[in-house]
Structures are given as C-alpha cells and as structure tokens.
Image 1 (cartoon, helix red, strand yellow):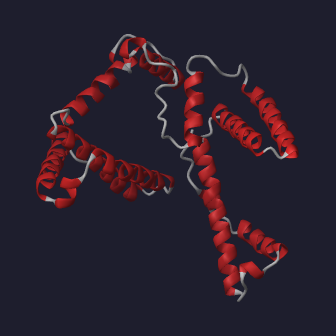
Image 2 (cartoon, helix red, strand yellow; image 1 turned 180 degrees about the vertical axis):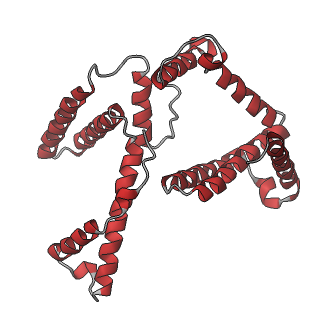
Image 3 (cartoon, one colour; image 1 turned 135 degrees about the horizontal axis):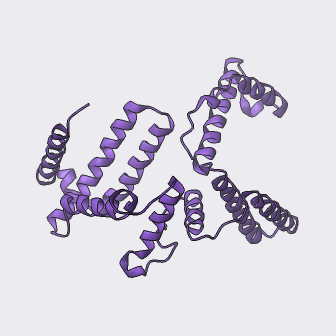
Length: 270
C-alpha cells in the first residue's frame, strides 16, 4: 500500500484541484451548500449500496465521490472565511482524542460496549452539558434508521429492558392493539399502532444485535431477485403476469425460492 507521504501528496493534489474547479468551472462555481446537500445524500446511499454488495472496487470509487463532497464544502467555507479543511480535520482529530480516553487517557475499558457508553457520556458533557440525550439524532434521518438510533441513545443512559426477551411481550401487546384498531377501521389510530409495532420490532432487532436497516434491505433484495425470476420465467413461457392466476405465480415463486442466491449476501450489520 501507499506510504503516508504519498497519501498526503494525493490529498494536497485533491485540494488544489478543488480550488481550481471553484474558480474555473461554471458548474462548480454555481454550487452552494444547499445545492450539494441532496447530491451528498445520494452519494452516501451509493456508497451504502457498494458496501452491501461487498464490491471493494465500487466502495473505493464511492468513497472518493463522498470525499469530494467533504472537500467541496470545506472549499466553500474557505471562500467565506467561515472555516477550511484544516478546521474540519483539526476539530475531528480533537473530538476523536477526547472521545477515546481509553487510548489517549487513563480510562480503562473491557469491551466495545463500554467504549460506546463512554462515547455517549462524553457527548452529553460537550457544550457545557446542555445537550439532551436525543438531540444528536438528525431530524432528516430515514424513520427506520432514526428509530434504531433513538433506541441506542436511550439505552446509553440505562433506559432499556432488563432482559432482552421482555421485548417479545411488548411486540405482542402492540400487535394486539393494532388488530383492535383495524377492527374499528380508525385509520389515524391504525397508523399510530403500526408505528408502535414497527418501533418495537426495531427494538427487538437492536437487542439481538441485528441491524434492522440491513435486515430489511436483505429481504428487499431477496424479493426483487425472486420477483425478477417470476417475471422472466413468465415472459419466457409466453405469458403475462397480469393474466396469470395467483396459484400459477406461486408455483414459479417456489421455483425462485429453490434457486435463491440471496442467502449468500455477506452479513454487513451488527
């Protein structure tokens, strides 16, 4: 692999290119923090896709695209004299050192769970201790990821089940409450109870060290693979899905399950 000096050289090259693009390229000159925001989110999801596919070449490429955005924002901050890449990196380094007292201080830890506990405790002490437990959860996070993060934050201060098995009684309770609202066909209450049930299921996944986002995406990809098989097989038979009976589709679906390769997907979650 490359030496530290070679890495520094390439990073400096990137900074120079970014500075030049902001002064010479019409498109780059027009960009603002707001215009880049949605593109950054898109790049983050493309990186996530590459990670789920375990495609190292694509991961490297998408990391580069995401790094470009970091440098882009820093260059815009430099132009307004608000901050530059030095400030970005310096603050990050200071934060990493501060939140790893077991590496750079005298704190002793036995496992990663204790490391995360210390991390959350130190975050609460920042900004004069005025930060609330859930204030660090981004408002714009997708709901499923946000729920998992909220529960993780609450756990860090001891708000959690005594025994993880207790969560299944909660799930049953929420399921029963949902069924009751479905019987009454109250759509507003049905939506609320669906949310409570989803939240409880995500909580269960967390308690059993399963990343719910990865678990659901794995099922999404499995369904897509099987449905694509169903569709292609139907076309090859000269049929139309819209004209097939559910029983005919189910027979091909079972074939798809036998040929399923989605179980080979690497486990990317904890």
